[in-house]
Picture 1: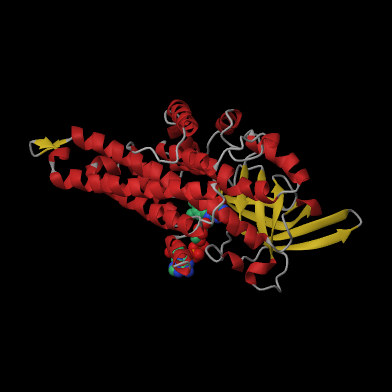
Picture 2: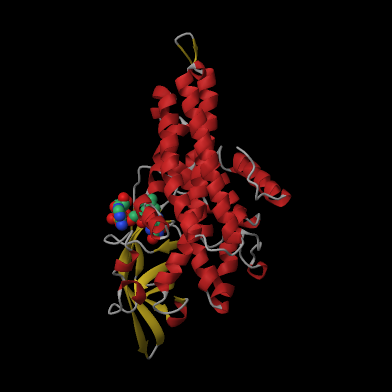
Length: 385
Ligand SMILES: Cc1cc2nc3c(=O)[nH]c(=O)nc-3n(C[C@H](O)[C@H](O)[C@H](O)COP(=O)(O)OP(=O)(O)OC[C@H]3O[C@@H](n4cnc5c(N)ncnc54)[C@H](O)[C@@H]3O)c2cc1C
């Protein structure tokens, strides 16, 4: 793959260090994590210790104050590990859940939760989706009611959340709930911090998935779950805006991880077909195969260029909703097309659990669904055309 033009020497070093770490500490071990259904917390603490979990956050809370391009590099390298479940465990923590706190937390909230999140000591999750509301965020039904009584000022949350990544093993959850059900859809939502162990909050069940096996995914239940008033994150009734803002980062990193996976899948497949013989020559000697892989490589270069362009725009503080939506739509679909071909060219082996490609096919599917399905992204682009 070409080096993005946005890379400085520091970006390059950052990428090389990350790649080395993942090759040594993740790739050889992650098969066991897939079996266990979770990423060991020690690995997240290691990543935190190396400064990879708080890339863009203020130094005073243990962050590194780097730019968005670094987040894209982290996600791309996570994707290159070939373990999508590992990638999403980390990116939900760094780029989908913790931005709720980092962007909208009060100084007291930042002081309390951001340093342990950056160190990987507290793992976080974001809980917006519900059994009856996914793409249509404004239609969530979880409810939070303000209660002022003898024992203080609280919010009481009721409802359930679905498909929540890190949901089984997280320590801190950023939860969306309706605080003004009378308000028009998007206007009455707020975000709350709910800690593991809060009475009235429980993991309903761990969900079994077709891919992302080492990522834990949960249904969450809130039954008269009382959190202190100080756990309201950002402004009351402005949660929809907060969610939409954080979606930008989420979608950019999903696209970056997808391009890391796709690029790595092509490399693995080129190596395989150069070695594998059929009809008296290697598979690489079949023009149909090498040309298809050449086209996929070209498409992934293009997708990657769009990812880094969107990350760069964001780093410059420029509006990039359209570009990020393009990243999510394009890369979420492309990774699936690439993996389909890579599995095809691996023949029967590509269907066997031992092959990385088999896992990568399963992991890729959800990238066109989660964090904004392709169709929803295309609407965002169309609105801006
Ligand atoms: C493994 C996994 C992890 C997840 N992690 C999290 C998490 O950590 N936190 C969280 O809050 N959520 C999470 N999600 C939820 C995810 O973001 C939603 O699944 C996604 O937004 C789609 O919502 P839905 O499943 O309700 O599908 P629906 O909204 O019911 O949509 C179903 C399908 O309909 C189509 N569609 C929807 N809207 C339109 C439209 N306007 N025009 C045309 N077609 C449309 C799309 O093809 C879409 O896939 C996760 C999901 C999965 C599967």
